[in-house]
Image (cartoon, rainbow, N blue to C red; front, side):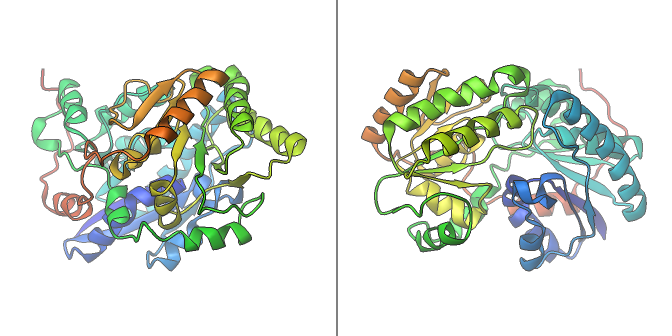
Length: 383
């Protein structure tokens, strides 16, 4: 059996990995190893370790590597600590392959540790273009990886142009869609109940039109994150519309965004906004499907929202260059422009589903390739 080590460090990681883990667990050629750490084991980022275990997955290791502060310095130090911690874990587990996702800073640290230990890497969602430091991290991981699972054909072409062997590149779509296809997207009862026991703010009537806001920091615009989210807040204040606001991730700059949100809550005490630290895909997908619009800079507005046809207002540079569907309107950080575009998207209403990022049948395909692909440790550039 081939031992595949999966790593979950955020709620988003888990949403993307859930169906892959299920398929790998059912494949008699694979042995699943699972590490949960970083934001996934911290309460402030929606500790999900319990959710992972109750879903039937056994966690082999919990790991802490995040240094408090959310600055460029603490992010760099956290990455260094992650290299040390994952080196120790890999020495203990001795996996045949490590599976990493996308472009988070700790994924580069994990990839470094595995590479120096001669453990092959599989990388999902490589080859895409975006803003922030994510752009550089994603391509760096690609060059360390032996097996590639991009979400789109364009992403696959970029991976090959980076000198990767075409036979190692498999277009599989966005794996979170697998989980979404299994859900009753018309049912909002669970998220209505969840408001009563989780998050802060009033219990909103989701039978009325509502907005979702998710705004993450842009690490290369560290000093501007407070003013950037303030523009979004001013637009939301004028809109006065029922809003579900999901807290930013743990990248450098999130402290500035969190500070602006806290000031908004304390000074305005908005009766039209409910805040969550995070939401599982089972609650988030129906919420997104039935939203009048999603605003901010989360990749969810480009990926899951396009699949579901939800209007998106993408703000700022974080998703610059990333493939987007017809549902996305891009704006800069300007209160009036954000407000105008949200209103236009709400007036437009739902879009036709766009399958740019796949159709929700990825997990089984990935598990099969993980079990059968002939992996060569020594890499060689193709040009």
